[in-house]
Length: 89
Image 1 (tube, rainbow, N blue to C red):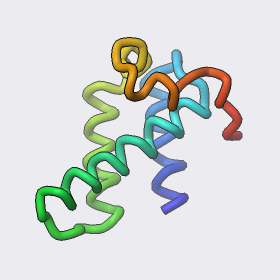
Image 2: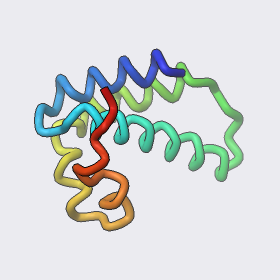
Image 3: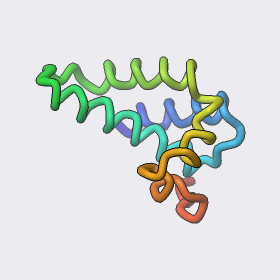
Image 4: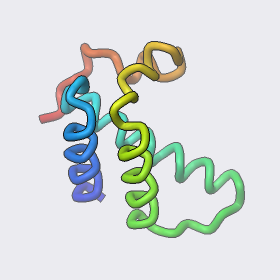
């Protein structure tokens, strides 16, 4: 799982230089967990981390350059994505 998170974080950083490494990692983890939770609530069988990583990669390609704008407009994620928590190396 860590390898998937690292690869996706690097992809997001390449797509959106506005994000710090810590924020990019947080976005990747949020996108993965939200997709898996939503799928589980819908009764969809778990397809594995590879499937989740592929979907998140597609989201990054489509919306990665705009993700830093989303947190400012959505209070649900604002606390999770504030700059004071950027400690991931």
